[in-house]
Image 1 (cartoon, helix red, strand yellow):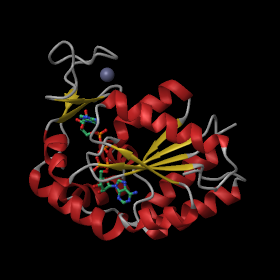
Image 2 (spheres, protein in one colour):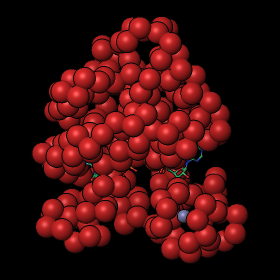
Image 3 (tube, rainbow, N blue to C red):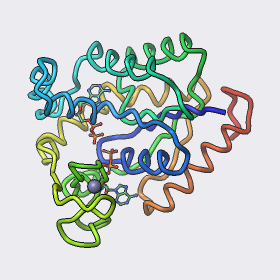
Length: 227
Ligand code: ADP
Ligand code: ADP
Ligand code: ZN
């Protein structure tokens, strides 16, 4: 049975890291609006150019643009299900997602809330680098590459830092999170599929807690709380 999962949490909470594991382990399709927007930027489309400045400042891109990106992917097909990483980030995006799911006869099975202290996010974000070729996520201290300068997964030496992973932009991103995204915690709590997970634990332990949260949900009738 296909499962659709949302990863909810502030910038640096570990959403991308865990999403990639779920792709590996469960064959889910990762839908990261951040990755899609960065791709649009680097491919130089008109939309990409328009959003670049907004992203670098740490503000949210308009709902219209991100909903359009997600719609295309959902309409392209399901597979084993989707893992939404960094979407939805506003209430209108959450409503649009519900409508899209209903149109395709599917539903959101679990919303994993990745809880991380604000103070930890500066360290998370300032140490982050990713592989430009395969997208693997690393960290200077907590998850460095085995060989310096070389991706463990694909061997590429194209390791990159994001322009918005600096303290100034992070402040704006965190403020955007509290103003616009954090209401989604209440929204999904009321819908009955919110699953909080301690995002401060080690990567492996977070993955285990998430697996338990997902499988607990899959075993229960849709939309009902088990806790
Ligand atoms: P993070 O690591 O901070 O969670 P992402 O890679 O998910 O960052 O997003 C990077 C930037 O892309 C955001 O700061 C925002 O400008 C834009 N973005 C990504 N997803 C969305 C979205 N769902 N709605 C609006 N803007 C988005
Ligand atoms: P998000 O997608 O939520 O912005 P990432 O998955 O990119 O977050 O993680 C942010 C940074 O923190 C990355 O450098 C990543 O390697 C590191 N990281 C992710 N999860 C953990 C964890 N549980 N413990 C320590 N570091 C982590
Ligand atoms: Zn790689």
